[in-house]
Length: 188
Image (cartoon, rainbow, N blue to C red; front, top):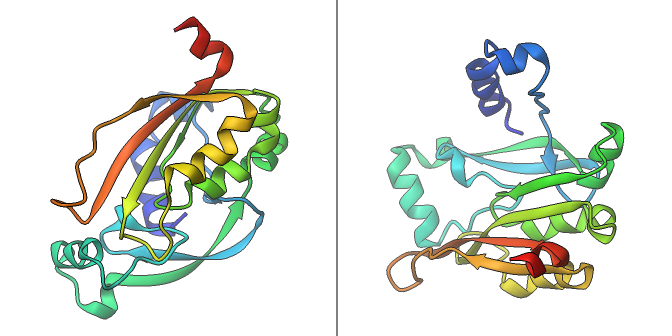
């Protein structure tokens, strides 16, 4: 949702055939569990930007700050961005189902899932790929339970955990999880 990142992405694809035909649509919003204006913590090392503030005392934060070669006041900015729930976004665009939902939102994956409970309850999402960061990167830390408590009651099964490292060597453990609907898991 950061304007400069969005504009860079738009510039890269606006001359592609897919974009010209309307097969690719861009939306300058953040996905969350509500529709509102929220603070977005934007970092010079933009891949760590999030609706959650980073823990500035963590090795994660300090290593990214050093890698960006920024001054303290230039490394982090707080922007106001529009957020939207996936359920509402899909209704507005008349999207009835999602084949693959990839969630990589730097620590608010549980909130994104809360914002699509209607689609989940009707089993309208086939496969969900979630980046889960375990460790000390953000002021709020997620656990497997935060994901499982939403997906399990709706009949989604964990079928893959990607090896992502360890907390001893790195400041966080980052891994991808893949969940599928129960009917798909039974066919595997």
